[in-house]
Image 1: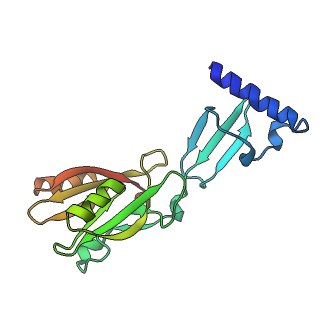
Image 2: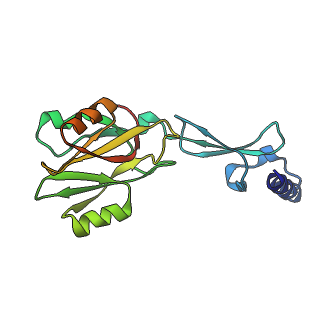
Image 3: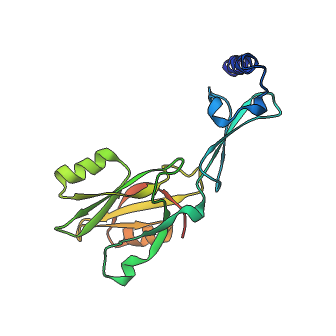
Length: 191
């Protein structure tokens, strides 16, 4: 609380020093967050909006990427099997606010497709597990703040294949068939 008061005083001093400009005359580039209140709004454009709120302090509003800016995420985009090509969610083809790269790798011996957001895990797959990098498949959320749902990753040791789904029921069925839960890769929009 004391820290926010100090930051508010510093920001007010800067405003007075800049020809007595009022806070509403500042744009987002003139404002430093400095530990002030942050609100997240799902479903809006990817940008930062700064405004003077009624409480007499700067408030920052981060806006999430719009769902309609996303593109389909296919379970297995290179597969010739029609059942494997269904869309399981939407992700972004370029970086957006609060997204991380989704690395795509393939093992040509088993034809397994491997997705991860973890650079260390990507490197392990290349150096130790026989995968080749295909680069960044797209960008996904690292958390649920922007309204994404979990992208579950499972692996079957017998078939040496990964399985991806956003459906809890489908995840449970895959586990019943011998797939091992490898956790949540990230968060994507539902199709």
